[in-house]
Length: 325
Image 1 (cartoon, helix red, strand yellow):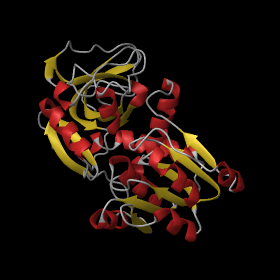
Image 2 (cartoon, rainbow, N blue to C red):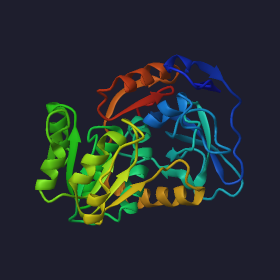
Image 3 (cartoon, rainbow, N blue to C red):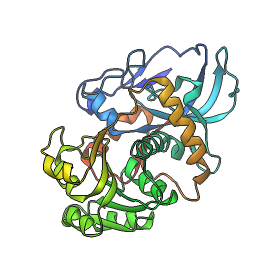
């Protein structure tokens, strides 16, 4: 089969077309003929050698795909050949075929395309697992950083649909307006607004989902309400930051760090099941991924260069063959 990015550790130029043996379905696994594969910031980290795959996972990049089941392994009961599906992967998505445990596979929502489905799975699982980690409740205030990013845009929509009072940050007036259009009650331009003080003046955020990392740490604490929970889900602007422990104690706040890919299979399977139960019924009426651009699988390097350059609204997706359906 054709793959992209067999070599890792370096700039986008290391992502070159290659071939690899077709995967074979093991017990409890299905083979998916890939129509589309999502491109995530985690892929950029893995390409640089900073985010290795879990033991036993494919060395290829790619954490989410959509496509059609082409074969099933022993013990697979739910899925049959021909099913249109999407899946959460520990790796291997930049390829024409993937093998994946049946518990990490979801039915592709029929009202969206394969391209959109490939942009939804990882973000939906990230958002749902972290809202649950923070015990977010309807009526609470959720602050989403990067509200027009791949994860952030889903967080804004899901939070709104689940009855949270959503606020968001984004870079520039146009992106702020997109956050509001997706359901955010308030949105702030992180380039010019003092968002931490403004959120605090509005009563503070009960839950913050932060992909930025170290650069936001101190200001996030200012923005938290008493009893608030800061969930750090990314480090796009630094691994380290300073925090006022006195403020943390006074607010009885919590700082939570989470990952998705490294969780045990049983935990990832439970997250996928929760997403299918709670988010899939909202698609596409209340939740729909933003797709900024698509690239053929062979052009993964161009997709990485675009994501690294910034300014992407939503997600980038790699396509295999005709992924318009």
